[in-house]
Length: 305
Image (tube, rainbow, N blue to C red; front, side, top):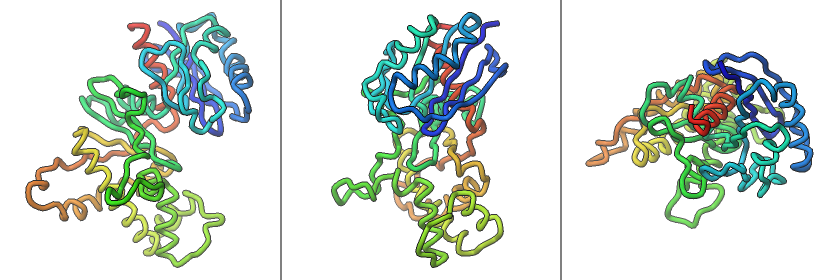
């Protein structure tokens, strides 16, 4: 049975694991992402990979930024959280260091493929993952293949505009109105709190879980906005399942609220638009491992396994 190295490059840490054809993890670890140049990053990735390079069929890498289909050099476009990577051939550089095949893919798309293989999108023909962080990342899987688009941009849900009457502005895009900061803003407004110092996602759900009525109202407002965007995506993609991931999705109250508020949002649909299929909303299942599974599956697809 072959083994593979999966690497997930995030804004704060690099997570990695060694897994086999059945996605059983044999080893794992992480290091901080405190680099300032592609050279430093590649040196760290090579250090992770060298102990395994004679025992693996290749390396699958999940990274921020855009990547074109069938680009074996893994050139980073729009470096995202790691702006210094923009234009760097990440795949080629790591392949030269380790001497094994390397496949590099966008982190949101890896998450979607991972959830398709082992998580909430299992057995779907059309599915989508939305990861809630500072913005809204994610990916679309159709027939077991990730949709990339002409520019590697498909699934970048953050850039959807919520207001088509005015010119596109940051305060009107889904990444701004649907990220976790929007949930915090809604809850703080309901509670009458002016400042946000010390209020993180964990604190928000402590209030919610404790039965704080103002916090619950803020969550419900946020859920109705989020559901309205899901209905837009349902009309375009018509997925069988939306899987919701990201840090705040770890608390089941988020997906519960999305499902509870959906009838309220749908009630405003009248006439012919009543025919829109009702979104099926589930919590993503794999957490931080989704990107690792998806990156390795992308590699296996390239290797025709």
